Length: 137
Image (cartoon, rainbow, N blue to C red):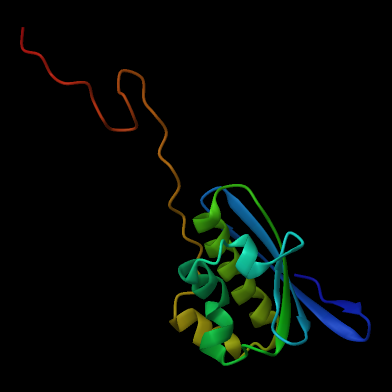
């Protein structure tokens, strides 16, 4: 959320959450590389085109693909949750850069946190809703 100065460049940051994942995203003007937890983004996301596309989607929509370097600290959950958390954090950081970006990102639904989380298991059931087979006698 805060804008810091780093080597004469302003750092824009945003936090994204999805399921149990949290991603702290920092944007620095650069060449468009993605670094997640110290690893290249493609390597961290296991070269999955779907995860990579999800992570880059806010930049792609705004046409800023090669304008900013993205540094992410992601924790918790799995790759699906982390990729979606990165997307939300990136969208929020882009809103700090230029408030005009907000209209475009909001219309695409990228500023809405996906609140779906795993439902808790209830006693007497096998999972959250799966019941044991009913026996009449």
